[in-house]
Image 1 (cartoon, helix red, strand yellow):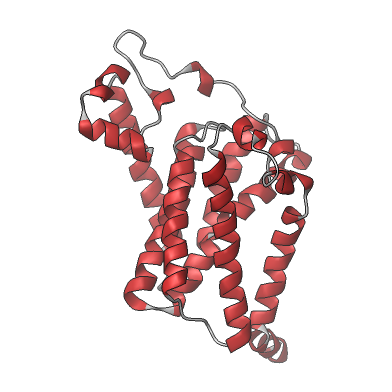
Image 2: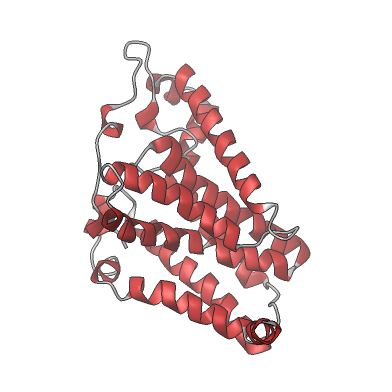
Amino acid sequence: MYAIEELVISNKPRLDLAWHLFIYVPLVLRPQFMRHFTSSKYAKYGKLPYIPLLLHIILGVVVVFRYQFKALASGEPPVPDVLDVAIGITNAIVSWRLCKYESRGNPRIARVGFQVMGLMVLFPAIMCYKTASPVWYNALAKMHNAFVYVRWLLIIGPALGVFDGYHELYTISVFFGGMLGVWEGRFPWDGILGVPLALVFHMGLVLMERFTSSVIAPESSHSNVLLRLILLIGLVEVGTYKTPSQRKVAPGYSKEIGDTKHDT
């Protein structure tokens, strides 16, 4: 057992790279993935802006494999540089931009779940800038895997036969895919910081969205600067507004949107 443990430790960069090739290459080779680069209709189908979606995909792949090849080249936990920090912060911002338009699944779990992933990318990126720590760099790189785990759960989910439609599958996939990415990131204190922090972010965003959407009306967004800022960064989705004359969630959120064949 000790010999196996030593073998794993001594070959950790190679095994880590092999794992990432295993989870990334099949998705990259899927026709649905390549169509993202040849047509904007898949972004339109998901009601997402085309250029930010492409940028999000490219930046995620770049930051992950920069980490992997730096670890393989040095044989030691790599240290982040300015480019890694810049890519991480940029992708966190792009992720939040995309969250504003997310319309699939339960908005207070799926959309907020993606927002949490964005925060859990931004936080280690800032800490990488402040500390240049290999621990925070690992968290930054591995957190990007959360988006990939969401896709794998969406692919595997229908075969399990336990989900009541795509709406439920998408919601659960986003939540647990995000948690898997946080767990794999091994945030400081031997990973203890990660999942609890993500759950705190999630609950905080949900409470903020619930409170704000219950007290504002769409017509007030034209005159309220703070509200316009909240809408711009996607803290409140227009579809969850409750107007004085119609106190209910917009009907677009009560039906299933999308299907697995259009996801990467």
